[in-house]
Length: 334
Image 1 (cartoon, one colour):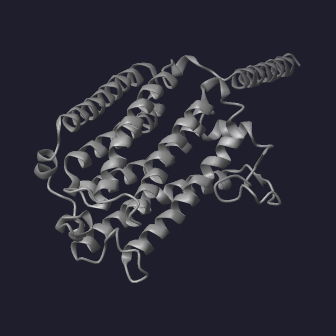
Image 2: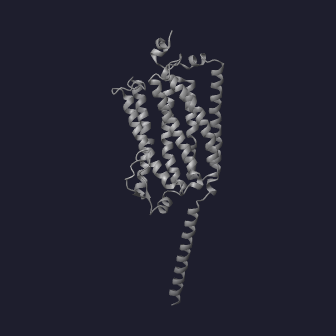
C-alpha cells in the first residue's frame, strides 16, 4: 500500500505513543535514548545554574536571570515530551510558546536591570534618544525620528513586550477551547478556519514585542559590553529563531507535502517529530553555552561608567556638604 493511500496518511492524525515506540528499530531507540539524555542533562545544568544564581546574585536579578536561563531547558523538555507522546504536540508547543513570550519581556527587564535599574537608566540616558528605526518593524525606516528617553517612553517599551506575555496565553487558551469544539486545526489554513487568524494575530503581537528589544539593545550594547550583553542577545535570538521560525518552516513544508507521510507518522506529525528532535539538540547546546555566558559574579561586576558617575556624584555631594557646613559655621560665628 502506497503512503498516499495509507489510512494513517489519509487520517492525518498523530499516532499514540505505543505505535511510535513499537515502530522504532535499533537506531531509532538509540536516537530516542540520546535525545532524552540530552534533555535530562540540560535540566541538570539549569538546576545547577539556578543554585549558582541564588548564591552569586542580588535578589532583584535572580528571578529575571532564572527565567531567561530556563528558556532552552523548557523548550527541550516540551520537545522531548512531544517526541515521546505525539498527540501532546499542540499542548507542548503552546506551553513553550507561552513561556518564551514571558522570556522576551524578562530579557528587556534584564537589560534595564544591568544598567542599574530604571532610575539609574533614566539618569544615565536623560540627554540621549532612542533609535526606533530598528528591526523587526522599522529597520528600513531610516527617516523615523529619534525619541527622547523619558519615563513614559521607557514604560511604552515595557508595555510592548508585556502585551505578548499577557495576550499569548489568552490566545493559546482560546485556541485550545476552539480545538475541543473542532474549530481549530493547524492544518486548516483557510479563511474560514480559526488557526490562520489566531496565528496571524500572534505573529503581529510577536513582531511588536521584538521591536522594544531591538530598540533597547541598540541603546545599551556599548554600555553593557563588559556584561556580555552581545553574546546574551545572540543566544536569545537563536532561541527565538529556532523555536519559532524553524517550527513554522517545517510545519509549512509538512502541509505542502514536502515532508512525506511515513507510517505511523502522517506528514504533519512527522514534521513536528523532526522539529522536536532538532530542538532538543539545539537547546541542549544553547543551555551549555548559556552556562558559560551567564557564569559570573553579577554583584562584583560594576559598570566603569557607572562607577565613574557615582564617584563624581559623591565628590560633588561632598563638596556641597562641606560648603554648606562652612557656611553654617560662618553664620554661627557671626
